[in-house]
Length: 140
Image (cartoon, rainbow, N blue to C red; front, side, top):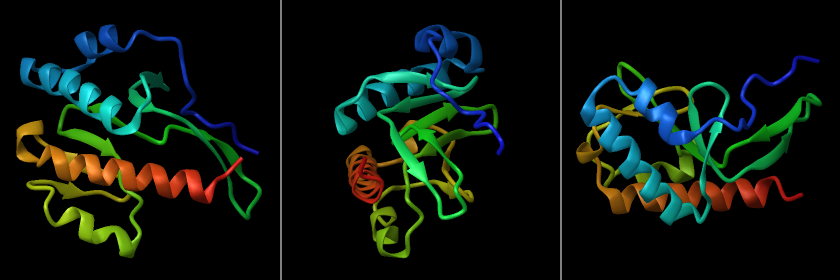
């Protein structure tokens, strides 16, 4: 079975942002996202793999037998956009996106150009809903 590529590391989150975020705006947004996600999740920021800042953790196991650990929520300040890993993708959670603001959807994440494009309260609701869903679905 394939080994997961995205695992928690001991890398320094602030050093990662300073090195990886390609603009001052993205660096500021990254630090503000850390504060927002820590407040909404109750978890400290931790590096996952080479480029994801994650909050909390859960252990998943699929019917296929594939299992591993992943952050409950997270983000990455990528070059094209900030990738937010905060949404379940479930149809019954889509209403949470209505007040979010300006974003694009990917297969597994939400893309934003800058943090000021989104409503922070709506983002906190999405984060809390996602954490609740994952902790309920993947009880240890």
